[in-house]
Image 1 (tube, helix red, strand yellow):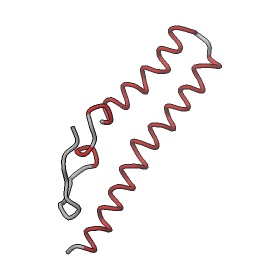
Image 2: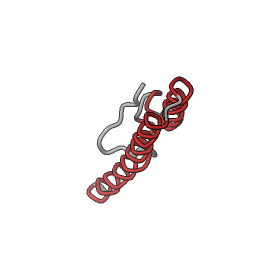
Image 3: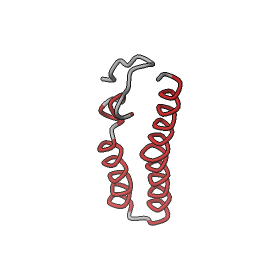
Image 4: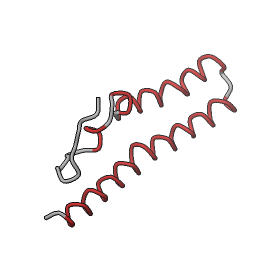
Length: 82
């Protein structure tokens, strides 16, 4: 369950605000399982390769861009609230 946070309280990480299914370990595990299952069931590279590419983009978005954006926003808010 997500933690309650007031707008002025410092939070160490975006992951402390996310439910279990949106944690880095669950994102990585799901991202590995999808192309692996595709290959295991279908053994078609033309299906598995686009799935793997979509997973890489998904990882980049949720594991790199979103946390970086959140940190930048938190830094900006701390500048406003000394």
